[in-house]
Image 1 (spheres, rainbow, N blue to C red):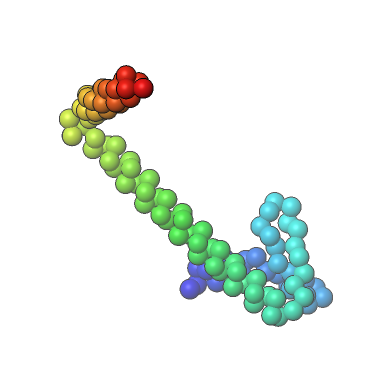
Image 2 (image 1 turned 90 degrees about the horizontal axis):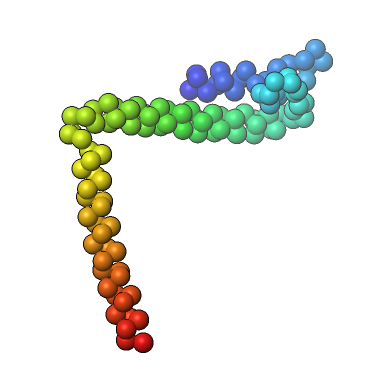
Length: 111
Protein backbone atom coordinates (compact mmCIF):
# COMPACT_ATOMS: atom_id res chain seq x y z
CA UNK A 1 0.00 0.00 0.00
CA UNK A 2 2.30 2.69 -1.24
CA UNK A 3 -0.32 5.42 -1.26
CA UNK A 4 -1.28 5.00 2.40
CA UNK A 5 2.35 4.67 3.46
CA UNK A 6 3.29 7.88 1.66
CA UNK A 7 0.35 9.76 3.18
CA UNK A 8 1.25 8.58 6.67
CA UNK A 9 4.98 9.17 6.29
CA UNK A 10 4.34 12.81 5.36
CA UNK A 11 2.94 13.37 8.86
CA UNK A 12 6.19 12.27 10.59
CA UNK A 13 9.51 14.15 10.78
CA UNK A 14 12.80 13.67 12.59
CA UNK A 15 14.21 16.71 14.36
CA UNK A 16 17.89 17.55 14.87
CA UNK A 17 18.01 15.77 18.22
CA UNK A 18 16.80 12.52 16.63
CA UNK A 19 13.31 12.60 18.09
CA UNK A 20 10.27 11.67 15.99
CA UNK A 21 7.66 14.40 15.62
CA UNK A 22 4.16 13.86 14.25
CA UNK A 23 2.25 16.76 12.71
CA UNK A 24 -1.51 17.01 13.00
CA UNK A 25 -2.03 18.50 9.54
CA UNK A 26 -3.44 21.86 10.58
CA UNK A 27 -2.14 25.15 9.23
CA UNK A 28 -0.19 26.10 12.33
CA UNK A 29 2.48 23.43 11.67
CA UNK A 30 2.37 22.36 15.30
CA UNK A 31 3.98 18.99 15.94
CA UNK A 32 3.91 16.54 18.81
CA UNK A 33 6.87 14.51 20.04
CA UNK A 34 6.37 10.76 19.87
CA UNK A 35 7.74 9.21 23.05
CA UNK A 36 8.34 5.61 21.99
CA UNK A 37 8.50 3.35 18.96
CA UNK A 38 5.36 1.52 20.09
CA UNK A 39 3.47 4.79 20.23
CA UNK A 40 4.76 5.68 16.77
CA UNK A 41 3.46 2.38 15.39
CA UNK A 42 0.07 2.94 17.03
CA UNK A 43 -0.19 6.43 15.53
CA UNK A 44 0.87 5.16 12.10
CA UNK A 45 -1.68 2.33 12.16
CA UNK A 46 -4.41 4.74 13.23
CA UNK A 47 -3.50 7.19 10.47
CA UNK A 48 -3.54 4.37 7.90
CA UNK A 49 -6.99 3.32 9.07
CA UNK A 50 -8.17 6.95 8.99
CA UNK A 51 -6.83 7.61 5.50
CA UNK A 52 -8.29 4.33 4.21
CA UNK A 53 -11.76 5.31 5.48
CA UNK A 54 -11.28 8.88 4.23
CA UNK A 55 -10.35 7.76 0.73
CA UNK A 56 -13.21 5.24 0.68
CA UNK A 57 -15.72 7.96 1.60
CA UNK A 58 -14.29 10.30 -1.04
CA UNK A 59 -14.45 7.69 -3.80
CA UNK A 60 -17.94 6.60 -2.78
CA UNK A 61 -19.09 10.22 -2.78
CA UNK A 62 -17.62 10.84 -6.22
CA UNK A 63 -19.28 7.72 -7.60
CA UNK A 64 -22.62 8.72 -6.08
CA UNK A 65 -22.35 12.28 -7.44
CA UNK A 66 -21.49 10.88 -10.88
CA UNK A 67 -24.51 8.55 -10.80
CA UNK A 68 -26.86 11.35 -9.73
CA UNK A 69 -25.56 13.74 -12.37
CA UNK A 70 -25.87 11.04 -15.05
CA UNK A 71 -29.45 10.41 -13.94
CA UNK A 72 -30.29 14.11 -14.06
CA UNK A 73 -28.70 14.51 -17.49
CA UNK A 74 -30.77 11.68 -18.96
CA UNK A 75 -33.95 12.67 -17.13
CA UNK A 76 -35.48 14.35 -20.19
CA UNK A 77 -35.45 11.04 -22.05
CA UNK A 78 -38.00 9.69 -19.59
CA UNK A 79 -40.60 12.22 -20.70
CA UNK A 80 -41.52 15.07 -18.35
CA UNK A 81 -41.22 13.23 -15.04
CA UNK A 82 -42.05 16.28 -12.95
CA UNK A 83 -45.59 16.53 -14.32
CA UNK A 84 -46.02 12.76 -14.16
CA UNK A 85 -44.91 12.58 -10.54
CA UNK A 86 -47.05 15.55 -9.59
CA UNK A 87 -50.24 13.99 -10.89
CA UNK A 88 -49.44 10.59 -9.37
CA UNK A 89 -48.65 12.12 -5.99
CA UNK A 90 -51.72 14.34 -6.18
CA UNK A 91 -54.03 11.40 -6.79
CA UNK A 92 -52.37 9.39 -4.03
CA UNK A 93 -52.57 12.21 -1.48
CA UNK A 94 -56.18 12.91 -2.41
CA UNK A 95 -57.19 9.30 -1.92
CA UNK A 96 -55.35 9.07 1.40
CA UNK A 97 -56.93 12.28 2.66
CA UNK A 98 -60.39 11.11 1.58
CA UNK A 99 -59.84 7.82 3.39
CA UNK A 100 -58.53 9.56 6.52
CA UNK A 101 -61.30 12.11 6.42
CA UNK A 102 -63.91 9.39 6.20
CA UNK A 103 -62.50 7.46 9.15
CA UNK A 104 -62.18 10.62 11.26
CA UNK A 105 -65.74 11.65 10.39
CA UNK A 106 -67.10 8.20 11.25
CA UNK A 107 -65.18 8.06 14.54
CA UNK A 108 -66.58 11.48 15.54
CA UNK A 109 -70.12 10.50 14.50
CA UNK A 110 -70.00 7.34 16.63
CA UNK A 111 -68.83 9.17 19.74
